[in-house]
Image 1 (tube, helix red, strand yellow):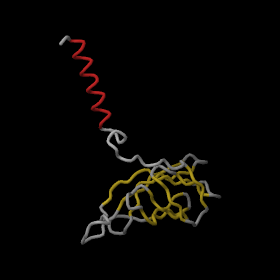
Image 2: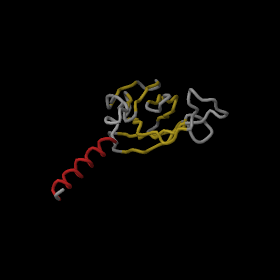
Image 3: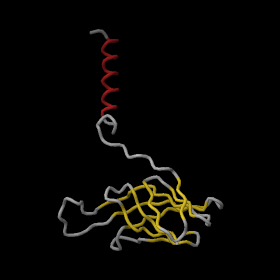
Image 4: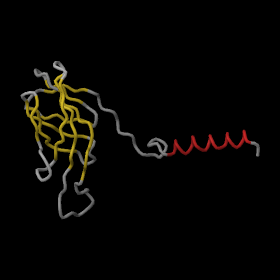
Length: 140
C-alpha cells in the first residue's frame, strides 16, 4: 500500500469516527430549539426551554435559562430514599442598562436558594421538567 492511499484511508476513518460521536449519527434525539425570546407578564409563571429567554413586559428585565448545573432528583422508574434536587443557572439582565448577573436556583430548599432578587424583581424557580430541559420561573 502506498503512502497516499494509507493517508486517504486514515483520513476517511477519522471523519467517520468523529461523525459517529455526534448525537445525529448515534441516533440520539436532538432537542427542538425553542424560540429564543418569549414575552411574559410580571407576576406570572413562564416556562423556559434550555437557552430560552423571557422578556418581562413593562420592566427592563430578561431571564434566560442557561444550563442545568446539577440534577440529583430521583428518576421516575427508581425508588429513592431522598427526592434529590436540581440546580439551574440563569442569566438575569437589564437590557436597557446593559447590566446582568448570573444566579443558580435550586428546585428544593436543602442545597441553596429557590429565588433571587435583581432589578427590583424577585425571580423564583417554580419547577423543573423531568429531563431538565425546561424550567418554570415566576417573576414578581
